[in-house]
Length: 337
Length: 278
Image 1 (spheres, helix red, strand yellow):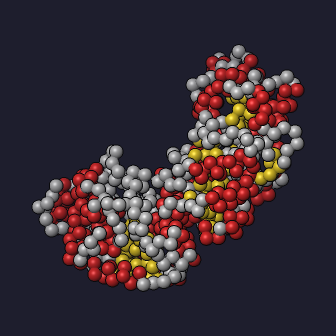
Image 2: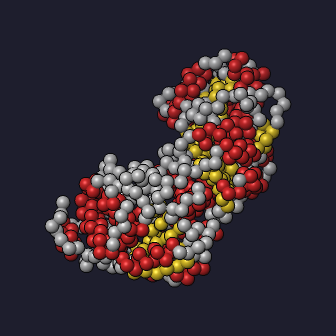
Image 3: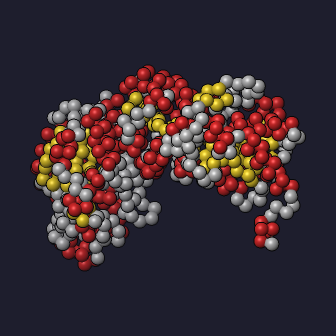
């Protein structure tokens, strides 16, 4: 376990900048493109939205506009990777992970092709467009595919690292990014290793395991809980697959209560992945996430509130899980009595 | 690789057919009909048209081949084995546990394949990607993609067709095995994909027609295809599903059915012998 001083350095405190993780992808791929000629990018009529437009301007020969044909795009990327290229496929998460799911599964992941898939406008971040263009299911449907690594970076800085690290890995990677701005909580120096969760603050009473922009919200919640005398740790589970079992089990052992927080359906998502790790380790868990509903149009903060994804929701979940932890009666047996 | 002449290519097609019958019999599962309809296409490509070196499967300047109609892979594996990619004896492992020769082509298992295919409608898009990648590297290599006519039901084929002409991929040649049958029956009854010539032309392709069982005609089409600039080329190869075995010809039921021992022997006899039977 790292000491507190070191942990404090991992995250920014006080007033922080707000930036979109999709912009981080756009910036990172330009940097990659300058260094490595194998980097190519594809989009399906969403170059501005996914921020791959900068790469397209800088490297027109290595940018492929495929039109509104995501399935075609996914397979073209597989073909490009067969010639040694490192293709980044960029479109909305609903289309890259959903529309082209089977192409991703069979032509990319089954064949273990070196394709990097960007899922932009994920979660509720595409507020106005409504449920058809929002994506609350991508973690579930990507993490179920063998060979595919699934990364949900928590902010701009981490997304840049994720894109660069993904390019160094041989094999398929899915990276989930957001349309809207969110606090930049990590630093250039914050450690980022695909597959390793980062403990951002150590807890005593409970651990909040979060991904994406829910990490910043979890940190806020933990800060407020501290004032109430409740010490909840925050773990940034940026890699959903391969999942960091050790860090999750450590948190369960040390705090005896887990809250998961994700901008995604609770069914099959990051929280479910955490529960899979905890199977066989009895520990109370509360899940913060979307509860089996489609999204809708609205402003992002309104939607986050409507779907139970605020710091208040996390605080409530921490109180709830601690109650269960402290009640000796919290056992399955009581259900049957 | 030495380019074989027409007579030899005809013999190779016969060998491929016999291998297919044996493999599917041995596995008691697999797809015969569409492999037999493609036998001359496989032999022409692997023993004449493709600029490749089976001993150096990762040679960068090789021509690429993508079997979009992946279910016909018994024919592909036979052509690969007999051209030297691996031992002919490995064909006996087809569709068996721990085999590199999966029921549909798996690149992770058999790395000398360009792609994992068989989920229909995807191979042409992959071939488009390969063609773009080769052009980016200024390589003269060509990409050949064999698709079935039933497979053309898939909308993605037409997405790929648009992209190929949009990007003026004259290094891409699609061969459509027009055997007129798919699992549930005649393609004209299941979902009519004709007129294919008009369709591909309207998508910006140069279209050639060939008798898919006449080696000379197939080679002529492949030669003509190389002369086309700024456009992808589609060769519509008229074929007969189950070609070469009388009781399998034009029968949808032989799409994916293994033969009995008696049927296997009859088929091999019809294909010229039972002498070299393993």
